[in-house]
Length: 210
Image (cartoon, rainbow, N blue to C red; front, side, top):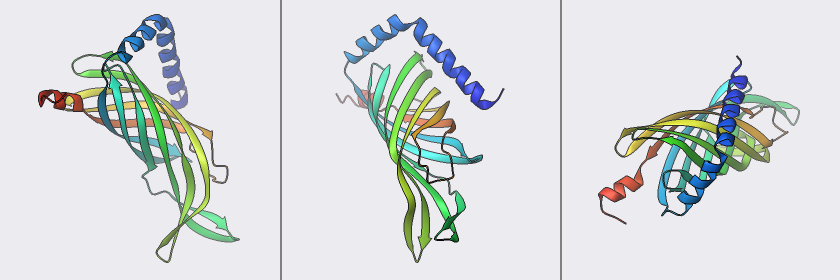
């Protein structure tokens, strides 16, 4: 089965699960939002494909979490892999590097949790730019830079490795709602997520900090 079909199948399973438990889901969220929120900090590495070439995007996220069930916040994501290509600029073949970054808002719902494992459905919407970077005479010029908007649903699995530290893996899909049509590269792609998390609330609790 092609990877895209597998991802859509997983998304369909998630949707079926949520629809079948819609009433309890709504009640869980209402109860969670009544609790005192806690601070969270996350780092993730998202691996995807651009024109059939593997690339990595790194991201930092800061947000708040309610009852270890629902969290939301903001983040910053940037293309980390050097991806060189050649374009025709002023009728000359020019070697450039692909660039991409965005500022994102995210929401994550934890639908299963025990002492060690956590399964969640994160969704993030990113607003930023993609462009070609041209390095000349020590300066970097951005060519064909345009505003872009992305939407990334996923499902992730997280394991608490140590008392204050967890690591996880997930799969998702990046949809470019507003693409940069001046670039030949396509950013819409399956996404493989590697993430880490620091449990600040547990640290503060053990330090007796309210």
